[in-house]
Length: 162
Image (cartoon, rainbow, N blue to C red; front, side, top):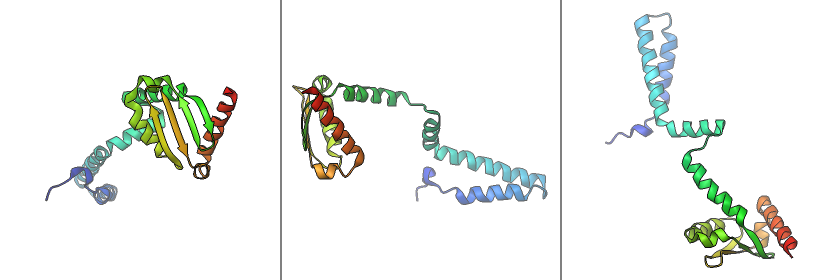
């Protein structure tokens, strides 16, 4: 049987070590030190098991980002900012972006991402023109408040463009 150190349950050993450390405060120094060392070692090992989650929690608390995250967010933000509403009819919207034309490698990923939203029937990118055609079920989309607000904003932008 192979031992998987990453999934070894440490709840019970940590509890025994901590209770043993507290219980031996007056019993004997050697026993107390032994339980304390076991507790410290188990705590360190438990921290090692969860180091990725602890790092993510610390970053969430202190607002740090890894270099990879910052690089991946910037092009996405630039892409969002580059979109212009070309045409809008409820249930169908065409957006245009020069970045889509310049980066055809984003086509499949972006299409799949947009299709994952509630109510979206299709998302098709034309990499030659940099246009994105999204068709959707109006009733399904409006069930999600944030998507309904997004549709309203797109309608406003389309009306302002005319």
